[in-house]
Length: 460
Ligand SMILES: Cc1cc2nc3c(=O)[nH]c(=O)nc-3n(C[C@H](O)[C@H](O)[C@H](O)COP(=O)(O)OP(=O)(O)OC[C@H]3O[C@@H](n4cnc5c(N)ncnc54)[C@H](O)[C@@H]3O)c2cc1C
Image (cartoon, rainbow, N blue to C red; front, side):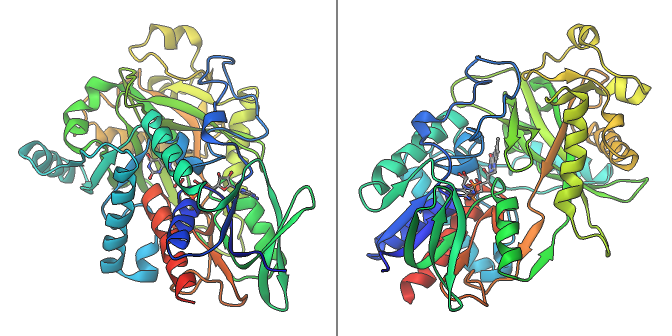
């Protein structure tokens, strides 16, 4: 018997916004997530209980109410052209309108109403100097909620939604139920089932490998996406603050001279912290970064990611990226590596003593080591060349004491073929949204993709 109008897998921004939109149009909704509620989500490293990742069953950084977004920096990128591919499905005008819709909800539930939009002389000067160094700065409107405040906002959303729909946490979905070419519900790992007219799948990057298995079984067509591999860079705030005060996040693109690879800066966190991220499916620890609204570190961190397209016959970019990350874990005794840029250039491993003598005090525990034993040569060259170019707009970023944590990977390399409204073409009542489906790469577009699917479901 069908109980619900829609069953949603994953309570990240995509799932939450899909649910909110559906209940507004009177639909009966069920959301399940394998992680915990916000109040129960606490990374043991952040709590000071352990120094490095202990591989929790459910990683508090990426799983639970709010998804990866709740433990994230909560930077809302409010400019179309960043954070995903949703524009390809719905067009720019509709995307801009949905970005406003999502942003309005975040502010209504408690996000800081102030946003950053660089337009002053400092920004214009930086863009000019960047161009001279071969860098392209992409100006964006950014609202910074902060990891701490983000938890409050998402908890407010939970309080609101929990009165309007059924929510089950600590509940991993094992399989989708498909009967006669139509999705009819989900089966949990404990064998219980929940049925619905529509199934909306939003498992995020954390669930990308689970989703890969499902789409393999259902024989859904996918397009391979490029894979992003890189490092998290950590410097003193003073290196970046002229720009971060203006832009908050400096989004920068660069084609490297030696290999002509496309690199970008990603997820910049002024006065922030480097964090470990545990990927349960692959049992590996990678790095990320965030910053709090009410506690400042004195360091800025950001990722440098190198984007590579692989060609046939190779078709397993997730496998490639996780292989590289596993090498780092292997050399770091199950943790992540950290290396001074000077040591990487000099071809020697970093030691704790050299890091302690340096000017940048690490915000995360990591094993001093040698990233050149982990990253292929072209990635190392790309990263070093990018840092040298960035030095033209952030003097000091290529200093020997700059810290590089490795590795950072983005497993959004799976992209499903979907209808414009994010329905799966070959299976009735099945919808795929958010980062896990390769539709988005950030909070705002993930949330917007949830609204797109929900509106289509509500229209019938
Ligand atoms: C540390 C960190 C910082 C970040 N900072 C930013 C930022 O500042 N700005 C930004 O825009 N983006 C940021 N991101 C990325 C952002 O969080 C994601 O793009 C966004 O959350 C994607 O939303 P989603 O709903 O698609 O998936 P997710 O938020 O990943 O949510 C997916 C949910 O599905 C659940 N799930 C997975 N598989 C199953 C299953 N089989 N059964 C049940 N539940 C399942 C997971 O537990 C998870 O809670 C950050 C990410 C991290 C990890």
